[in-house]
Image (cartoon, rainbow, N blue to C red; front, side, top):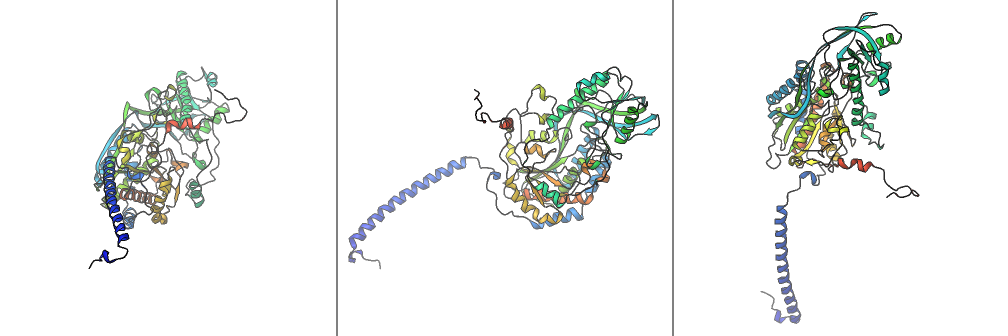
Length: 599
């Protein structure tokens, strides 16, 4: 039975309360309806706004790692590795892969076909644009014929023209450092073979060429530097190379027959004992692959010991006669460059259009077979894709591999790919910028983005030789540090221990990082990369370490898998504004007290 309010002494007070409650209920109902309507309008308005990309959202504190897949990748990489088969096919079967050369064309086609054979989809070549001259070294030899006979270790400098068969001529030493030096040699070089440049000191080899990073080395890498300024400027380097181009044209105008340059040194004295560094430093300028900047006379680089003997004889006044033959072939002035691309398609309808990328550069220099630079990075990317295909993974996002070309001459392939797909920095067209490679020129405006810029989660690169992976350069991306820290925890027994916020440069992840995309280069054990294989005649299959390469493929495959499977894309740094960098670096005005203000 319900309470009879008429029998309650406080009936009137209760009735007043009920009336108030009744009124409040009506008001609340009205307010609820109004809020519901407002919320509905807000949701409808919100639904019309584009959803924020997942890399802008808060990242989970704990990563959901598939440890069973970690183990499967480990077993496939270490127990069923095929990386050295790829290595021999690339380094032995194809050989050196100078950009624009017939060998690089073969390598593009071979890697495309290998991706198809391992199960990748959409394996194809992408044209990134005109490069310059195609070139091959067919044969080069240099020897001294008097006052003694001696066979030299020598190779043609890249894009050197050929001599007209074997030639014999007197040697002369020339050292041109400034414009004023040209006058010293006018009228003295006709019919001569020029030994060009200072004889450097050859120090004792008292440190090992082959080294691994110890704990102290990794700690140094992990520690973020606080020193400002004084960094290497590639643009300034290229301006210096323009003077070498003038030297080559001067020698040609003076009717010199050919030039011989000494090999530079490597780390720990690696540029001795028959190792020669053979890249654009050996010739007359950096842009020698373009017809308008081509070497004006034939040029070869020789071992420092051979150069030193001739140098000392000439300095002592002893006549020296040299016989040489530089036999090279040009295959065209307007060769195009191509990247090799392949995919494992994504399967999650919500994120399959998003992309995780890995890669390295396929091109090399011409004196070795490009095994460690950067055959190793190519092989690791190929093996990582083979592992993931062998395990028949079904990634949520699309996994895409890119093998770039033109890296050695200016990272053309990766920058070209990024420009076509994700975005680019407008570059200066001022006359003084014409001697600088396209993607190193001064910015002329803000980054221009393309729609797919929102779809790339990350790019992972290998290009520090053939050493095993020890960690990751984070390129200043603090938000990704706690994520990668969890990813490497199950890999620490393989030596993967170090994350650093440091930037590292000189290779293809820069193309992605430059437009605000997460692009990462792995930290690798140095081995003998900087001492005797980087750009040398010793960069051959024998310098590759199978266990290191297998470990690197394991690590890269794991990183790529994690990125492809997590709920969100990886976090990004704020979008760069390269067009503002120069202004930000200008000195502040009117800082010093007492100095008259300038209008």
